[in-house]
Length: 143
Image (cartoon, rainbow, N blue to C red; front, top):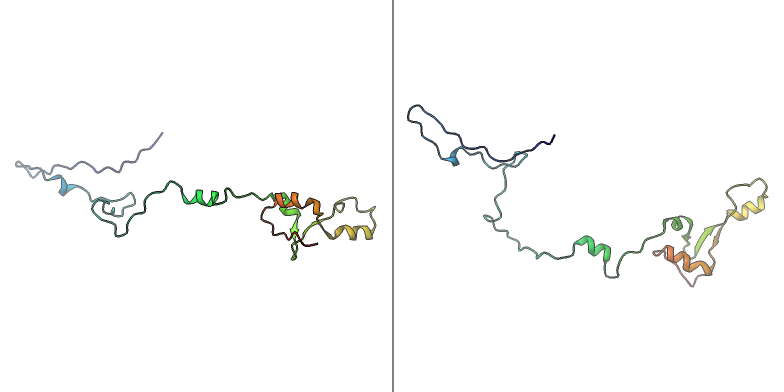
């Protein structure tokens, strides 16, 4: 069941004062123009001239400019890679060693200590990592 809300003004009523009843003009009985919330409506655009000149409408919106920009679309960061790699202060990409998640009882302490350290990503893998993380601040000359 749909409800419809009408904001139209009611029709003017005829006021009778006895035998010589006459109709009042519609403008005197009409309700003042109010918005749905009860506040008076602003004057129409035709009656009030804007003091500021209007900007001509453009075909692109601000959202399109942000997304497309001058250099095309924004590149997306691969979030799984962003959690696995980080950059040091000198611009090297470092990662954790594999082999420190489970089955630790059979690994000796020295081996576990060595696997706990962060190691530098191999130079041959730099292109793969920087492709997944386009906004990473990497110093390619750092050794």
